[in-house]
Length: 323
Image (cartoon, rainbow, N blue to C red; front, side, top):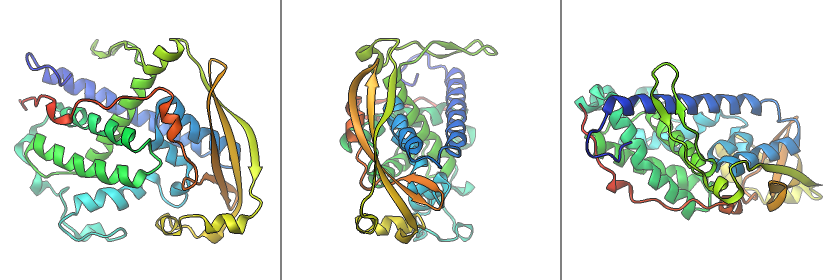
């Protein structure tokens, strides 16, 4: 798309970006809906967490099954701790501050003509430029286990890339979510491949058929499954609680004393019936609901089933003109 230097079709690019973002938002809605109905079963919670990572390389949405999502809507937590510090960078913002009284880069006074007149072309270019950086973060950090580093670095870079592309500092949480979630989806497509899709209304080709890394490794009709092979209750709950990151729990608005049960769920991953890996997932119970405890759950190996390679630097991508 944005790689074409000649004959760049801005309107086609904008339409494709629109359909891509719509598909991403629809899939996230489905994931959120399903997660409401699995929280009463520790094994289902653990499997959902692992499946998100194994099937799509999506450690980002996997956290919707984790402790971080107990008292927050996941998106609200990301806004408060990672987006707002960038958007309100000139306001000495601290998590929890009332943003209604602050003037951040989301104020319309920061909009340039490029932002006001963009038909989706430049927004799509920002997404394209950020993707190589996203891949680099995932590869160098061995996945999403250290979400703190990924969110901080990604959103700082996004502000820089968007300013470079649009020529202004305008930045909103919607812009940030759209770019990140589009990059997460593209990473998944590198693993799973894409089918040729033609929009039945516009007759535009939304995506090309392309083999994914899993298809190349396991065959086009591959099937990856995640099965629980062991469930071990914690023998010393008080000792286990002492091992948890209390500072991080405080940002989730959780007290360690709320945890009333913990188990380790071992999940075996198979491709076409053959074992290709396993992982132990710690799951804790608060009230009647189970959550993945991510401090001691390590998922780095799950990103190496079919490793995605670091891409060309984002700066090498062409800069389309805003018409």
